[in-house]
Image 1 (spheres, rainbow, N blue to C red):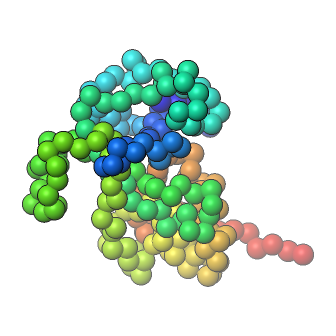
Image 2: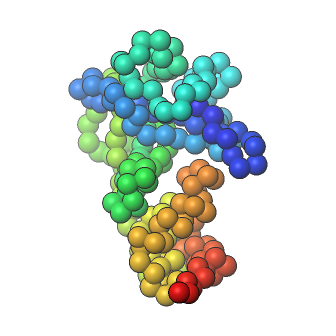
Length: 211
């Protein structure tokens, strides 16, 4: 658990996640970070992991912990007493921006919820699985052509980048993505509809550069 300092001086809890895979291997470097932006996010985390945020040791280092490198840092690692799955999806923006996170958090799942979702996930699962297993969420069928479908996407996902690019006169995605991160990254994993992205693009159209 870390603390992110926002622009207004407030703090947002951040969870650094280290995946434990089916073969028992635990990622040495941070697998994913999750912002607990709202009271609902924090309550969901506490209910899923069975722990109060107030009882966790806050890690105040500048860089994420590298597992197994410094034994004294292991006191900051919390391992749940029951299996918890971290569901995530790939971040399309990471293909063109090395600074963009490669994984985007979707939700936590526990064994009980896994059973309730069995009709949608027919593949068999063992009775007990390693803690904090990483699994990729189904990739959404992203359609960037319309603006009224009501779907919401990560602020730097392909439909949002495409919509902003069109609104800005065909500006290349390599220039659109940094602008989106500058506007939304400090607010956590913001999700927008295409219509909201277009409205934002109209209000924040880049000024033409003059020689």
